Every structure is written in C-alpha cells, then in structure tokens.
Length: 443
Ligand SMILES: [Zn+2]
Image 1 (cartoon, rainbow, N blue to C red):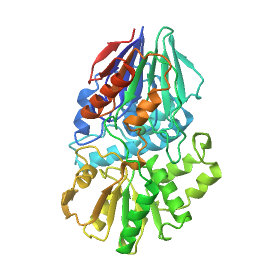
Image 2: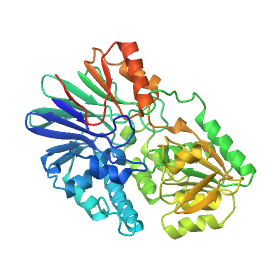
Image 3: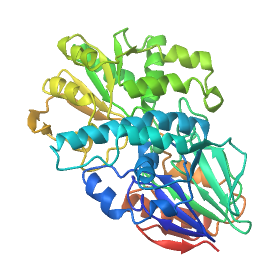
Image 4: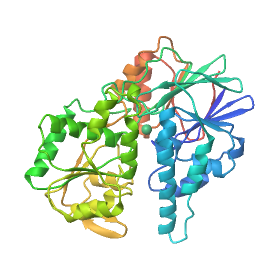
C-alpha cells in the first residue's frame, strides 16, 4: 500500500488521504478546506482525477472530512462511498446544506465565483453512498476494510485497511474518554501504520467542572439582564450544549430562562442523535427529553424576531466559528452591548471571525459593516470532541505491539510536532508529521 496526504497536513481541515494498492485508488475522507482562502485552495490543490478514484471511505460526516464529495461526483467519480449509518444520515443533512452555502457564497460574489457545487449536486452525490456496519469487513480489490466506532460524533469510525500483510488505521477525529453524550473511543490492540489527528497535540483541556463554569457564565449574563449567544457547530457540539443546559436547569443551577436552538441543521442533527442510543451514554428516552430543553427556531423570520426582544435568553446558532449562518445577525444585534455575552465552544481556526473575537478584537466586520465589540467574549474549549494530548496518549496505550510508523495529521504545525515528540518519547515508535502531498510506501 501507498499513502499520499492530500489535506489536513499541518492544518486542521481538508482531510483527504489517498491509499493506493495495485490498481485500486481509495480516498479515506474527502473533506473541504475551511478558512479564509477556501475557494482558491479547493480548485488549485486537488491534484487527483475524480474518475480514477475507485472508492471513498469516510471516518465521519463533519464537512472538513466529507464536504468535497459532491465536487468529486460532479467531476466524474463513479465509485461507492462507504460509511456507517450515522455518517450517511448526517451527510445527507450536512452535504445538502454545504451545497446551499456554496450557492449563497457564489451569489454574494456577484458572479466572480462559481459555486464549488450546488444543493442539487450534493443531493445527487448521496446516491453513491453505501452503508457499512461496524465490525463487518468489506472488500475493495484485495483490500479489507473495517469500521469501528470512534465516539467523536454519531457514526464516527476508525477506518482500518488491511492488504493481508499490513494494517493501516485512520483515527479520523479522536475523542477523549469523558464526553457528556458519546461513548468512549474503541480501544485498538494492533496496527502496522497509524494516521492520527493532533488538533490538541500540544494542549491539555482544563480539568474543570464544565457545567459549573457554564452556569457561572449564564448567571453572570442574566444578572446584567443580558443575552448569551453561543455560536456552535450544528453536529455534535450543539447537542452537547443542549445536554449541559438541560442538566443545569434540572439541577436548578440556572434560572428557567428561554433557550433557543436557532439552526435548522442543528435541529435535524439533534433529532437524529436519539436514533443512535447504542453510540450514546444515555438512553433514547433521556435523549429526546434533553432535546426538548430548547425551543426550535426553524424559519429565518423567527430567527430575526429573536433580536427584537431584550429579555435574557440563550441563543445557540451556527456557525461555530461565526463564519456564516444565523449567528451573524445575532452578533450584529447583541455585540455592541456589554451586558451580553458571546460564548465560543470549540476550536477557532485562524482567519475566522471567531478567532478574531476570542483573541480580543475590539471591532469586527460583518458583510462590510463594522461593529464595535462591547459584549463579553468567552471561549470554553472544554466541550471539544477532540482528545487532548494526554487522552491521545492514553488511547495509544491500548496498542499491544509496536506501531511501525505513525503519521501525525490534522493539527497546526506546533501541535503536530509536539504530539510527534510525545509519542516518540513515550512509546519509542517512529513518528512523522505528514506534509501536504507527501507519499509513503506502507511496507
Ligand atoms: Zn470532526
């Protein structure tokens, strides 16, 4: 087998790994690059002929792992896209939304940019999906492929590919062991090669009581009669936040103020979550109870109406890095007043509005208008569905034999480099930080 790194090399988005074996070409993940230079990057940098890809295997549905699929299909990909049931269900929400976003972005450019793909392209690409059960190997050419639950989001999987001589394992996004909703990642015992993510390869999540801190932020905002805006990723994070808010209300640690989930995509993802109790720490019934914590805001009109009232409330809206979505018009409305709070709950990529805000921007620009920032801005990384380095090392401890080579991906250079040294030090394995377009023979 040979592997080539086509993305997520020294950065956290655009996960795409090409695995070649004899005449078979498989892509493991097919993600979009995100961030400021997104459009140029997409077109220039994907050096692969879509027609020559035989199959795609997905670790999970997040758009930086799946969002390039409709583009590949549009350009002649005719193979199958293998993934778990949860990943398929989430992709049917996320890819279609991504098509809409691409169309809107193109419209806003007044004809200077074409959409990478449309909603229709995204819907069409869903026909190529084929659901695979966990722990049930499939064959592509002479390769055997197995998916195991990885606990990052619904449907997320470790992808294990074997050619009979060597086994290569893709971690996808690796989660910690103490998540609120998702079960812990499957522990693996052996692999010859390992591709591992390093988003938090140089960081430790604070060992704090997340519920207590969240309660403090909410209560401080309510004491000022303010509104709390939570920009959140629709899939995974939004549901974790709902779980926490429901616990806080149940334990009477926060008053019974209105909570709004203002994201049609997050609403669909929340409803879907409860169909997969086998991947959760809670039952289907508990899950559906938690999801009633918030009032669902479906239409754009209802969403705008939320800004008309100054009564204390919590609004959860996308996108998670405030790069688009409904959270923008809430920010426009609430960010000028110091009684309000904006709480980010995930990793912020440099170049995004979220990154600027958590790094203390005093003014922000939304659609060419400038807004002064007076609201309090907080950043709580403790809800992250990514393992910190201690948890990554703990997961690696379950391997019973030496891993021949570890490739560190999906992390900024300092994070990837730091994780490399930690793995070398702890296990004595050979580790490389994968670079963009680098290839390796897996012998
Ligand atoms: Zn992810």
